[in-house]
Length: 384
Ligand SMILES: Cc1ncc(COP(=O)(O)O)c(C=O)c1O
Image (tube, rainbow, N blue to C red; front, side, top):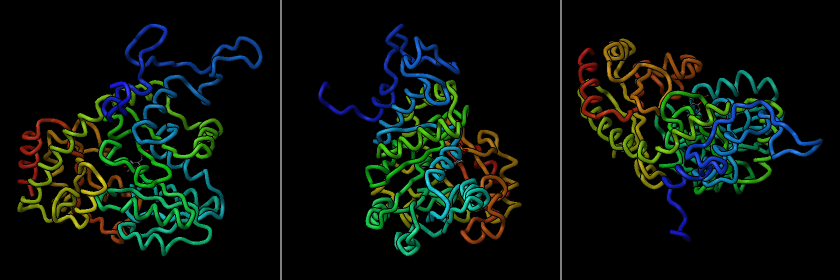
C-alpha cells in the first residue's frame, strides 16, 4: 500500500516506532540519560540535555501527534502537568471558559493555583454551545472542554464550539482522555489543541502517569517545548517507553473496551437496583445522536446511580474482579466513587451544583471476559 495513508492501528504501531537504525531492534530503545556528549562547542547530534529533549520522548511525541492528527505532541509528567503547561501558555488577566463538569483536579488547579496568578475562569455547561458563546468576553483566550465529561458522561459539540471559537478568535482545547484518538478526533472537528492524561487509555496498563498536549500550530509547539525546558515537568524515558508499548495495542484494546462497555451499560440499565445509567451509547442518553456523529464508538466509561452513599459503599466493598480505585482506561476494570475520590476536591456544594451525587459509582470497564465482569457486578449489587 505505498501511496495509501496508513490506518490508525498501523500508525500506532509504526509511527515513531520504526526499528532502531543502529541495531534493528523492533522496539524503541529507552535512553535513560541526563546528558549527551558533544564533539566540540556547539556541535551535537541534536540532543543536549534530557529536560530539553530525549530520543525516547521524541519518538513518543511523533507517535501521539500522528494519532491525533496534530503537528507536535509534547509530553509531560502527568495529565495535570500537561494541563498546567497549557494554562501557563496564557498570562495574568486572560480569561478561560471551561466546562462545569471536569475531572476534579482541573478546577482545583484553576481555582486554587492559577487564579492566584491572575487568570480568570468561568464555568458553564458546555453541552449547550450557546452557553460557551455567552460566556466569552473580550479577554477570553481559551475554551477548555472535556467530552465526554468525568463522571457525568455529558457531551460537548466540538464542531459547534470550534466554530464559535474561530469567530471569536479564542483557542479551543479538548480533553480527549475518555475516548482516546481511536474513537474521537477533536482536531478534525476544529479543536486547536488536544490534551490527554496518557495515564489512562493511551498507556492502558495502569503502570505509569503521563500527559500530552497535541498541537495544530508551530507557535503552540514552540511555546510548549519552551515550557518543557523552562518548567521541566517532562515525562521520563522509561514512562515514555511504557506509553509507546501500550499504544501499539490501543486499537484492539479500544474495540474490546467498547464492546464490553456497551454490554455492561445495557446490563446496568436493566438492573432494578440501579436508578440511572450515564453512558452515551444508550439510546436514552440525551446526546446519543451527537455521540453517534462525533465519536466512532462509545467507549467503556459508565457512571451509574445507586441511590445513596451507603448503597455505593455496600456494593463497592463486595467487588472482586472490578478493583476499587481511582483512575481509568486500564486493561483491568476499575470502579470508583466520584464524590469521595476523583471529585472530592469540588466540595459537596460544588458537586451538588453540577449533579454529582453521593450514590454515584463510575466504572471503567476493562478487557477481562465480560461475563466475569457482569457476574462480579451482579453479586456486588445484590448487597444493596
Ligand atoms: C479526563 C481527565 N483529564 C485529566 C486527568 C489528569 O491526569 P493525571 O492523573 O495523569 O494527572 C484525569 C485524571 O483522572 C482525567 O480523568
